[in-house]
Each structure stands twice: as C-alpha cells, then as structure tokens.
Amino acid sequence: MGSLVSFLFKITIVVKVRFGEISSELQDRVNKVTDFPLLEEILKLAVTSNSLEEFQQYLEQVSQAFSE
Image (cartoon, rainbow, N blue to C red; front, side, top):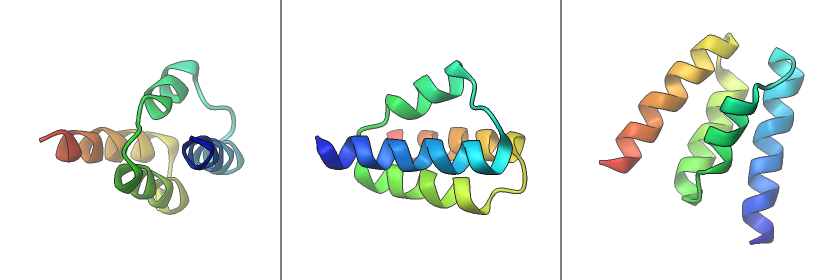
C-alpha cells in the first residue's frame, strides 16, 4: 500500500508544481486509481502535458483505455 500512496503523492506534487493547485475533483479522480501501470502512465502525463487541461483530457483517455 505504501507504494500506491507514494505514486499518488508524486502525481499530485508534479501536477501542483507544473500547473498550480489541483482541484479536489481531479485529486479524487487520481486517488481512485489503484492500477500501477495506469498510475505510471498518469505520472508520465503529468510530466509531459503542456497544460492542466491537456493533462485532464489525457487522464480521461488513458483511464478509459485501461478500463476496457
């Protein structure tokens, strides 16, 4: 469980540093993810997205792809 919390913390920190405060809705969305490969993709998106809006769009696409 510690690794999951660590991953979620890293994603939150990257989003906050790059784009400012993270909304509670977005935070809740990220916190619901428990799949490590998906968390890895989300972390990559947080690092490479050009804007918060782009991150949110990619997050939705990636989440849908992993749920299929």
